[in-house]
Length: 107
Image (cartoon, rainbow, N blue to C red; front, side):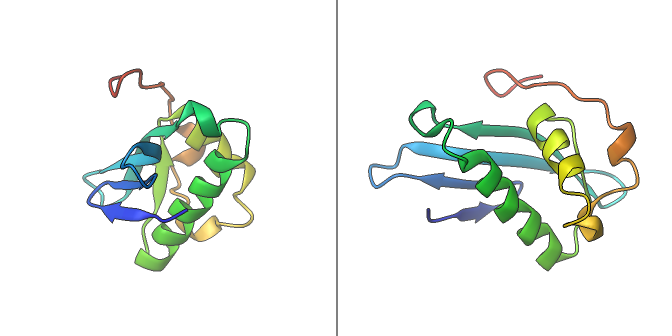
C-alpha cells in the first residue's frame, strides 16, 4: 500500500482513488495527539490491514516524536497490545483514555 500523510490523517487509496484505509488524529492542547478514527474498506477487512495501518501510524509518530492516546476503540486496544514495541509514542494518559467509536466520522 502507498500511504498518504496529511495534517491529522494517514490514509491509502486504490488506483481509482477509492479510500482503502484511514486513521485520523487530532492535536491536543498538550502537544500530544488523540487517534479518533480508523477505517478499513470492507473489501480489505480480515486481512490484517488495520494492524499494518497502525504500524505505519506508530512509526510516523515515532519519527515525529509524537505521543498518542486513542479514543478510537480499535486504536486504543492496538496501542495497549503493542506498548512494549512502541513505549516512546504512548502518552501517560493512554491507559485512562475513554473510548468512543466514530460512526460516519462522528462520535
